Length: 308
Image (cartoon, rainbow, N blue to C red; front, side, top):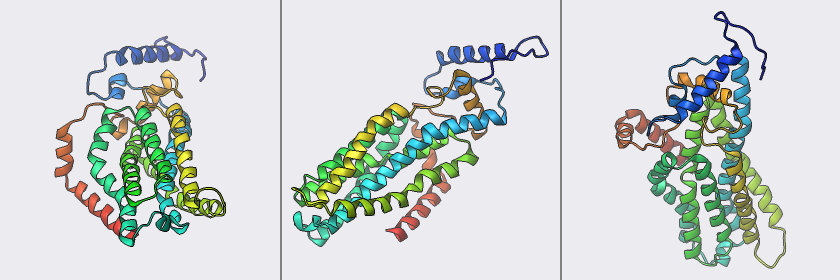
């Protein structure tokens, strides 16, 4: 950042203005009201100078730090979810003595768990800092995936797949919230496409890995090797997520104090804030009464029924 001191019309330097902005950021951060948006409390009504160059620089930093984690974690979620079918090809159904209906239930129970746990996941997304919540979810479903390799019957597979779906339940809504908290509205569709697009990549990668690991003639079955391999990748990724991810703009470690103000300023037009820890039931009822919510649900159901 350029530290050159240039005088403004009233004789105050740009450097001094930046220093005052940073000091105001620290002072207001100590007086943040409970339940209020942190960014709104930090920046208040002040106008922060933001050039197009500043905007691009902050967006690049955000992509490197936040978007990269979203892409990787969503890739892992799809990978862990999709390997069950490849496990069946390598003898899972025969080794665990599964009937056709039992295998179908093992495959479906993850989605059932996601649906049942979704309301509580929404509450966790509000109450738990994202830097803590996401690695916990990743670690949880990674352990569940590894434990599937130890199962030898229908009950064990059903339980571990249920836990897999339970921990994955918060993934998609959490990613949507994080995207909206870090990017302008016009930037969000492309970022969602980046992490959601790993769906196909993860499926193709799962097929290639399954074929390769399926050729191993070891002490355990090929499907067990597959589950352990992809599960361990996920488990080992959890600490990485904790180290790299930040909760929100005010706590971002990859931005300077002045860049935090600029990052908040560039999202002002969103009029959505950047995060609050206050869960309001009035907002839940408002969403239920909103016709667009039900139209979106209907669209999602139609899309997923045809893709099932």
